[in-house]
Length: 150
Image (cartoon, rainbow, N blue to C red; front, side, top):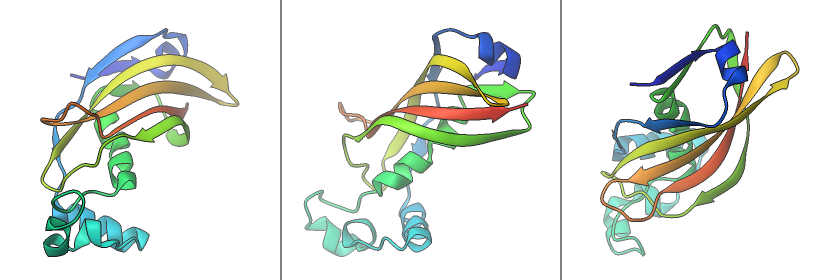
């Protein structure tokens, strides 16, 4: 169940635990489509047979594919209403700490750190950890800066 608040409530919110999203399976089809969209066809991602003998024992998701799941995953734990538009403002302290194997599942844990007025909008700083099912190390950690407009 997501934390739901209006844009005004977001602007006034202090540090808030947002909880954990559902698991998302990372499929080879997702990886292949991402490779095509970004023109990043490195064999560790798309050559299943060769990747079996590679450094990760099989194909892995692109780090930026895992990162691109943030809108979906964080959208499951934070819903802001009374918003006409939202944009990515940036990322602080982004680290890809462990590869995500194809077929693996990931989920996000989030914590709203702070908000501030930014022009006409409200910028939220959300600390996000993307976990890999069955792994002690997360796939990535970052502070995501999300800008929402009324």
